[in-house]
Length: 95
Image 1: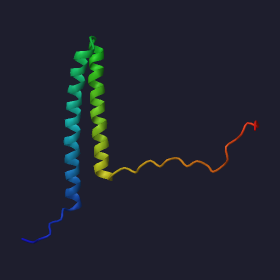
Image 2: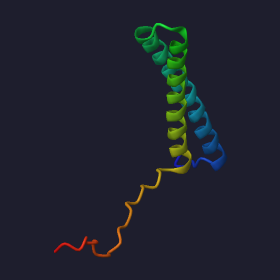
Image 3: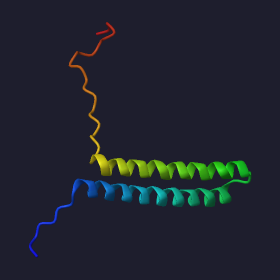
Image 4: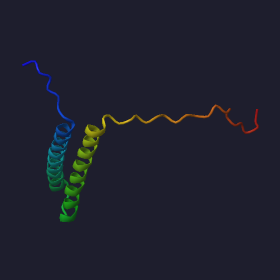
């Protein structure tokens, strides 16, 4: 009963893929529905309504992709602030 049950890397990878597929499908569907609803409320033309649905689907897929990349690669590296040179500021000759 006191056995140490460790998950093999293959099973962990399969669980990550399952979670990412589930997340991707859910966010795609929910964002598409939100785009369709907002398109019905805000736009009159069918073309703009479909564009609203496509935009919602893109937002859903993009957010799912970002979340899955965090799951597979860990937390992303923070962007470093650019280093400024220690050179003195230029003066325009008027002291």
